Amino acid sequence: MRKTPAILKLVVLAALLAAAAFAQTADPAKNAAKPPTTREMNLMCWQEFGELVPARIRTVLVPFGSLEPHGVIPSGTDNLAPEAMARDIAAKVDALIAPTLNYGMTEAMKAFPGAVSIPAEVYSPFAETVLDNLAANGFKNIIILNGHGGNTAALNAAATRVANARRVRVLVVNWWTLADDITKAVFKQNGGHAGNNETAYIQAFLPDSVHPERYKPEMASPNAPAGAYYAAPVASTILLYEKGQGYPTFDAAQAREYFRKVNDRVAELVLDTIKKWDLAGVYKN
Image (cartoon, rainbow, N blue to C red; front, side, top):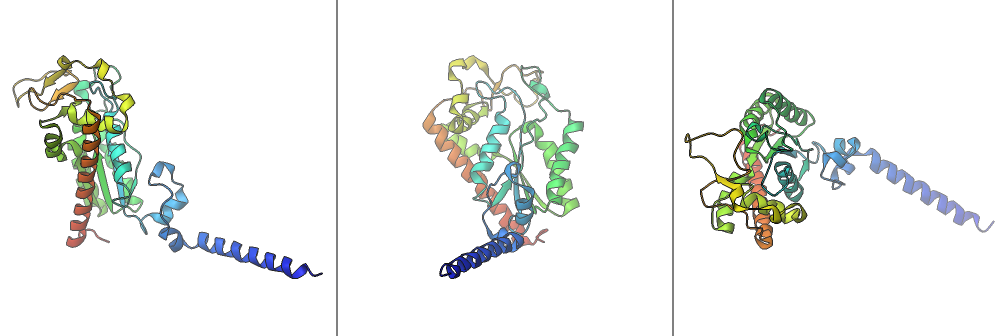
């Protein structure tokens, strides 16, 4: 009989703990205040997403890319780069990460082994629908991290239509252009498609997928001067922005420096753009 009070205390304590756990689960406000278990929508359950968006998180990073040849780095570079960028900056800009759209428009490189190109009449409405659905899910700031120049015009148009129709804010980031001055500062010269800049960015987080043993300088060609000529398919898978500049360096230290500086620049742009949208009161609520 002497043990009965102790047993009752344990029963009462267990009941209180269970009630507290239930209350926390049932209270969306408390759940929304907790940090997300993951930043990636692919890995998040729908209940947690509903607790976070838009009550706690209003920004989403959306990587767009393509599958096309890139010299001696992965054919999926245009997907891998914005994905790595999104993972690196998501917490800094307080955003979730949407799944990557891994295919893009790359007609001029379609002839090379492993390339996949989506026609514009298919790609454009699909990309727009992805953005529209993200807006419908409650995101107010949709940040497109574009890894492929061939997608840019379609994404710009889709961004404008969705922003106006859904009253959301959409930013399209072409990271290699945004980082032009960083490329020239780190490498002391201009870059290129699969050149020093893209090769270094991939090398920073996927060194085993970079193959300098397969590289030869003659694999590279300068981009044609505007209007000078056009080749379909392209003659080279490394396309230099300036003749004689942009060859891959395969330097690990440069790769780490470049990766860090590029990601910091992108995060800075995202935060600054959202701040200015808020100051202007544009589609704020």
